[in-house]
Amino acid sequence: MSTHESVAPATGTERIQQHRRYLMCRPEHFTVSYSINPWMEPSRPTDTARALQQWQTLYDTYLALGHDVDLIDPIDGLPDMVYTANGGFLIDGVAYGAKFRFAERVPEGPAFMEWFAANGFDVVEPAEVNEGEGDFLLVGQTILAGTGFRSTGDSHREVGEVFGREVVSLTLTDPRFYHLDTAIAVLDPVEGPGGAERANIAYLPNAFDERSQAILRERYPDAIQVSDADGAVFGLNSASDGRNAIISPRATGFEAQLRERGYTPIMLDLSELLLGGGGIKCCTLELRGAVR
Image: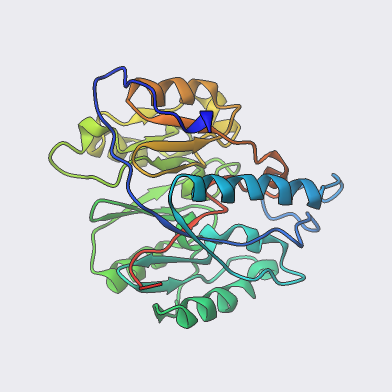
């Protein structure tokens, strides 16, 4: 498949593909019947068949790249289950469950936790409001944690206690970027010596308050800073295996930046699912740890 062919890195850096295991959910019941973010307009028609087709292309792309994909059954009446990234946060076989902010999504939390338990994960039921990998991103040994619109600051403390890792709190200020995974992309999990040179994150500076921007500049001085134009088309809501980065075809500037750093961009349109406020990463929850 031509989109998966590697290009010679402009920097001479050889990116290393790493195996991933993901959880996805077919958007069989996808629609926009309520509004809990600026992208959702119930008056705008949605095409479930088109959403399924676009989702299937993402699923097939992961398999073509050699990754494993598990599926959770969709539930009628829960159209946002397709956004599996919000269903929990998993490291080393432990699943910290989600506790959704809005009533429309609350039933998803138990459904995901049941799936985690049935598939060999040790489940921790949350006490604090959090929306899983939507607001928690693992970079090396550090958890970057978002707040401002969905997950609460108390969940940052709780996730740190669950996993015994450093948590860096970042505050989102633009309602279009209501989850951390809409404003930061983890391109490579490496952190520490050599980590900055590998540009292991990309982010949208204007999605954050000044304190958070300063933290990101200090911790990741060589990270890719994405333009407002590319952020506005959900360019950062992407998935990377350390070599291949699946991104929106409209994020043309980000595509060029990735190529310059030695990544192989794969352009994939999820425009129908963006009507619900979700993109590539929203549809993709990383499963770390438990045996299949």
